[in-house]
Image: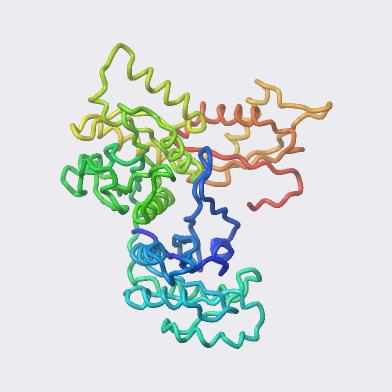
Length: 442
């Protein structure tokens, strides 16, 4: 079952980003446009007392200097309410009620969604004189918090968890492999879902942007349960011109966050684009299993070794995701689809694989004998001990004499040796290097 979604709404300068970061539990950069493959971190997973949920910062709702609430402000508030299970309405506790706050509150009152009114920037036990004016918003008792000083956040989190729709977290899908089908618009993602399940479970259209939401489709094959998550196509930031599509992108990012394996679907005719690379980076940085699916392969004119050359070219352009298998399909014609599910199962299993400490240390010692560790100014890197400390994705801890001596190229060499022996097909793996005496927690 999907994790609940909590949206934070509010005007600029009320401390939403700080509030967001504190609830997530770490500093999360919220960027407008990130070069390369950096994920947009407007969505993050949060946890409170064993309850996991997605937290979304909708960005500042900024009223026009002449209008109380312009169209964009209203649209963002409306869309946040539509996609969220719980809404946190953040206001400035020191400023009292502004006209913009009152207008957003009017929209919130008309919706049948739980709304939690949070007055931020209340930095002392003594409430500001105008604090009680917030009752005029008609949204119940306001919570006084200070995000900077982390005061009152526990009470808000208690209320958030208590407000989740009953039964949303009740069903377990631990036995199911969750597959997010991601990619640009109009590459055949919905057609692929329909072909997998053998019926028209998702609306299919040639018009880009038809899928506005993330849709979960459970089904079973050969005794293995799957959940397919069809997502809205992710376009370049400059192409996301309307708010509806902007929130579709957020839904797609949330789908990546909660999947086990991401199928990156690219158009065989168009080839790999820069946007494809960015979308691949989202799955990679999220630590998800990944398979690159070259769809519409039936439309490509074949010559000798066309498939091999295409795979080689994609691998070369996605070097940061070289572990991801490249497969070819035609969703419309139902070609080469069942092998995709078999591969997704393999990738999910590899992502959950754990290597015993004894075998791992033996492998690393052999690797060090085959290729000497780097040294600097007569000081040589020593690896005392290695252990796998995490799965989904695999995480390895190395105890070393000096982490500064661990050159990137040698780290990549060790990763390649681990993959040569144990595979981890389709899964990113991560290393953490610690020196003697350092704490073992992350």
